[in-house]
Length: 182
Image (cartoon, rainbow, N blue to C red; front, side):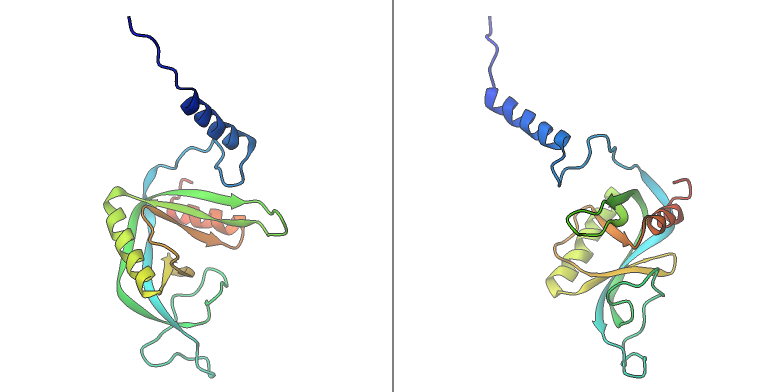
């Protein structure tokens, strides 16, 4: 007859992790939040590596640079000129989840969408963001002909990324643009 194996350390570690998530560790996601499912997107998400350059005093762009599509709302760098570098990544299928971080510790609330790319796009997402990261370039995020952000890449993306929004309404409108049934 086999005696049951006791694993008090592993059990205690697992219970501690669950307890932290339940009581609200600031970095843990709520346990009730289910992962979003993959959808064919109504409008593609385009990620483009870009090099920024300030506009000329007259408001134009230097040779070889141009304005990106109009911004969905003003963000740092939205008035600059950019040179598109390399081939963009066009994402047509992804899981899309609304994000909201409530205001806390004198930081304003923040909103956006979490995008999880399909398995077919993961390699391309990692490749384009690794290239931008190594070259210290930025990535422009363009949806439905509007530029949503131009951001530095702090580390390569391996399966997903976030699209920031200025308000909850703007994030929800973008979500409905990508997935009309949302």
